[in-house]
Amino acid sequence: MDVVIVGAGKAGSLHYRAYSRLGRSGVLDRTRIRFVDPRERAGAELAALLRADGLPENVVAAREKLEPTAPETTIVDLCLPSRTLAPALVDWWRAGYRNFVIEKPFMVPQELAREVGQVLASSRAVLVRNYLHSRVHATVRELIDLYDLEPVLCVTNFSKDRRADSLRGRGASADGLPTVYEVEMPHQLYIGDDLLGAARSLDHAEDLDPMAGEDGRLRLGEGLLVGRAASGAAFVHYSNLHHPAVVRSLDLFCRGRLSVHATYAPICEEFTDIKAGVILGRGDAVLAKQLFTEDDNMHGMISSAYHTLRGGTGGRLGLDEVLRSDGLIRSAIAGGPGSGAGGAAPAASAPRTDLLQEWVVDSFRSGLENGTGRSFLRFLERRQRTRLSGVLPSLDPARDAVPGSRGTPGHAVRGALV
Image (cartoon, rainbow, N blue to C red):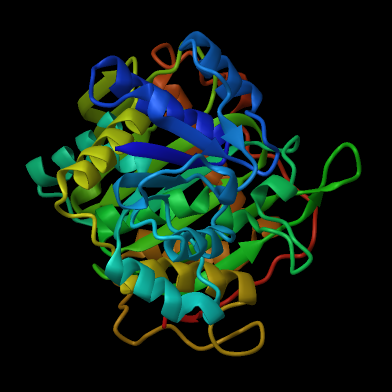
């Protein structure tokens, strides 16, 4: 099958690297991979990969400029910001394409919801989530099953320094700027859904976007989502895009004083010493430990999607699944369901029966600027680095603090998802 990667920037390069690996193993023909990007050129990372493969930069500015293809046997891989992906999906579908790879949860404008539903019903689309293909995540799942763990609280922290990033590249338009909820948090949301069950309610959201970079231009900042999953467990998803070090951490607190602490490999970084690990503990005692010196989850994700679409089975994505994540992100951006800063009360079916869960949720409701929740995040990050020090050299223990931030005041929301 032919492959068209829409987007020749950083994300496109990561996807191409995975396709290239499939090409080296004889699964596909790398010369039949093309790119569409309005800049009509490959980004630095992609250009380097293409040179290494001895291939030209086959990048065109728009779909209409592609050489004639057979849409019914072409995979369209949409490497686009979450807020611009739905219009592109509809556009390619109108042109006759029916095989899609879509990375992480994306947002659907209300005026396109019906047509996106038609696209998904009449196409084969795979919603790919690279961290679910990581060896770290597989190990976490294995520990949950092996020890019959009952999570009560899940905390994720996906932070890095994106102050040099352009908001335009993240989907900025005249209609508004992208928020912190649309960059790393979609990854955090699907990790939480996979471990706890689908998100059921949103108790609190805080957004310190946008923040000014050193050049005075607005940049993505810092944000937080706190809510309840279908299992009754609470989740806290935090992302700071002004953080000086890369953090991809998961802390899962379970009944019986058991806890799982995991560090995912940050596949977007050009580190030579990336390592990842998972620890199961009870109090200060380590019960199990697994370390990884590599974790190419992007290859696992693309390989699975390609074989699904090429095999003619599976690849059916439902609109309900898409709108569930879309609703959570939009609820956070808009200040939550209902009107005003307070919104509606959480669903009565979300009992709070665990003291740790109750304390953490309440500490974040007081706001990141208050300091209690930030101190909790700092404690978790320092503890992760201490436990994994010496085996995770890409994590610098000297840079373990979650720095304070200043930006547009955040907002708090409460209410059940719709």
